[in-house]
Length: 192
Image (cartoon, rainbow, N blue to C red; front, side, top):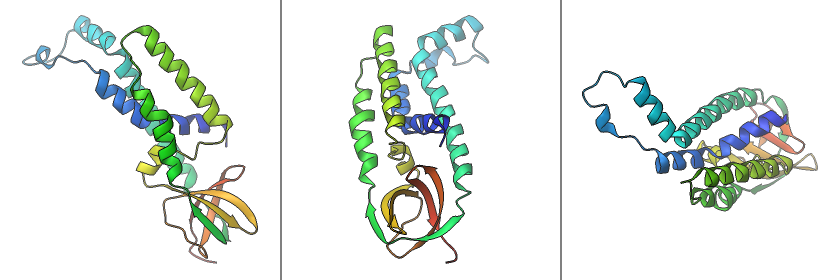
């Protein structure tokens, strides 16, 4: 899997953080728009500057949504196999570990000054580097919210991690698509 795809997975994993920061920091006075057909450019520019961080969050959410559409297209090609599952361990708690360890504490960052925003940016860059280098991209809380599950499996005598939208059990046959060294997307095979 290319680094660019892993960066996309990292952005996708921060979806909840972007939403929470947006809700926490957006500052729009609705009364300035009541009764007007459009907002004058100087007022719009002032509003955008006042809401720079929420606008960055919206841009990151849009980038995450585009990446998710790309990811769905990639995984639709899971045709290798079928492979029969010999052993299986449910690892869905991995999503919660990432959420509780990284995302939720970041919401508590004070973001009232440029220095604090830069601090958050540096922290997110460092976490992203670790996320990508350690191949933890599969432990993605957003994927969990979107219905994906994580399994450690053994098939054909080899251990691997599967990401799937379906419940998988020992004895099931799955078609796979390699995402990384030992990480695969899987869907139940229609034939064996």
